[in-house]
Length: 333
Image (cartoon, rainbow, N blue to C red):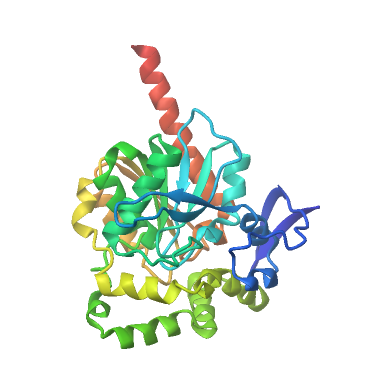
């Protein structure tokens, strides 16, 4: 059976086959995963794996969650990060479209979020997140990649690209949260207060409100299910500790790194973003040395969820255009 997904007044064609899973979900996912109705979220959840990643700050490898490509190619791999306190399920609509277009596609959970095994809690500050992702890249991807970061994932991507330029060929920044000064005053909270804050952060009402702010014209029934998808990783037993550790560590502060980015960059922004104004798209475009910017009309803060077809078209065109330029330069030599 083939599905089309209706979001508000828009109809997004999804040309992938969704099969009944019979609860064939990874055993490490919270049991609440079985309640998710969205067939695309269930389909992608069935493909989540844990791979061992050796890091310098842990004696044992971290079993790290990701979605691996069905096959690896010789072309530039596309590696998808996610936003603040989210998971690879954020890419449930866009991932299959990239894969269907022939791109080697990875969706990687950032250390401290997603579905990795953090029972022996490692540090989840910025340096640890960066080191963990580098070791993941070094172990499994092993080639310069197009790194895609939405929202706070853009800060993760910029931080990584500046520190490990050999690993990143191109960047895609989506509704980028890159001008915040880390976690601000949250870093100075007493730990007891911080734990109270993260308890509120994973609450269903707050997540439901976040969906209202993130998207345009989202039906209530869809919003309920998307809330269940978005907070699923919060139900893992170590989530509270990992999130408090990140909050009290100071978080990402990458504004001073933006002009150090050397990679060609595509900036994508939802025109109706109510979380981060699209005026920051103009500022970011001016500050990045080599960037283009594209806006998506009638779209909120997470275009890869709300308008996956348009988002993936822009990413594919960017990747293919740069590859074509490279081939032309080689042929002229």
